[in-house]
Image 1 (tube, rainbow, N blue to C red):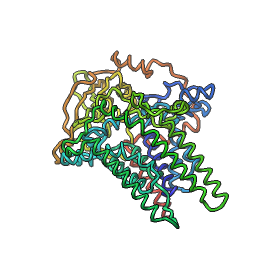
Image 2: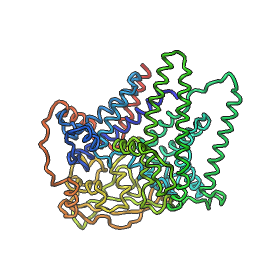
Image 3: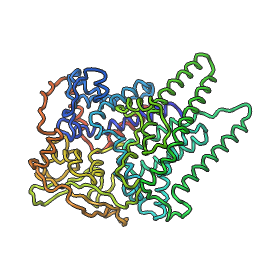
Image 4: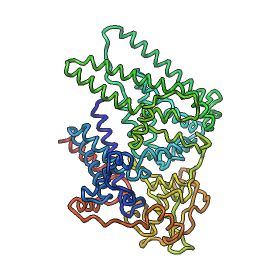
Length: 571
């Protein structure tokens, strides 16, 4: 695969991530947002250790830029957004330096409040929904395609569920096998899987990023051997067939497919899964490690066949460097993987693997397998035909009448059509979708959102649809509903919902339960520092914000990108 195609893909991912952040930033980490950056300890680090073990973010040096914490974050987002945009429009700007600046900018903002902006933490919640039987129903923000597909035959949905699990659990291992046919098969399978999720669900940049990473793992152009070309091909084909046979047999056994589609196991108790993992874990680590280093060795040998001494040296040095970096990340992922099960039957790891994992943990560079460490879950895969979602309501009096305060993109009123928001990750929407099983006190984002609505903060209100309260509601309550996709296809009702209970009784800004929680979080009661004096940079940032505003989706960014790319292509 062309190197430029991968670089453009990564820049597109960054562009969408920065755009999604930018339109939500005032309501998220603004001074009066649901999780303001000012309440964190973002003082200048005294030492490098203080910087790395605390909050490793450029925002901690905001006073050096004569900007507030929020304005520094906004500047970093705009820098990343501009760089990613220009890199796609001007191919000459594609390169490591541009990507490094974008990564540092995004990481610095993400570390301010990783609960809000860490896509992987939200992916953890998304996976919880994904591993349900009716995954089309349970998606955090399902699209219209998910609605219509969910009305398909019962057996079809069961087959789709199995395919999804196979793509997530089994297929990724095939990328490590240095056989061209297997790697191409893995890419096609992963591409179809993530393309399906892009159509049926709204998972931000997760699916696009996975496709781009899969592109980078594709093998290079096929080399023609002068001798033994037939034998090489026969060995490759035989190995591919053997590996796929083992894969299909594993799937056959894992899901008990011999019992038929109707009886195959999709609901798997966690205890049973852990017992199976105890056996698999012992063999997976050494096999995966061997395949990784075999792939690296093959790449090093191929680099030595490059024509020209200087080119050969540069290629070999590049392979060694990438191998060291990739090997470090690979080793750092082994320690949390080996701890998936509480068992002595795990592959022993050297001490430096655990040290490397601990050293890289603040930077989120290695997989921590956090979803699989959710020990409180009784069932790893379970049948669930409905979803739980929180619905906010406002009123001018404690006794009503109550009007819904709908979110932009998650299910609310039964008549609301599912949204299509490619590339966008609406944080408070998703928080409402995944907080239904948590208490109000354990949902600080929802609690802070309620408080900001009651105090009429203009930066937070755009995170919701217009509510019909020109001056803002004086009381807010939250109802917990279970939603099911409506079986009718007449377009009148997309959802059926049933009230579970009152999640939060009628509450006003001065209600002790709310004010005590806001004091505990630090939203109120914490002394504010003297505001930074306005300067050219902060004034420019405010003017740009006034022009862009806080739109509910990325449509404007898509239009701007398409227009610029077309003009660039024509001229």
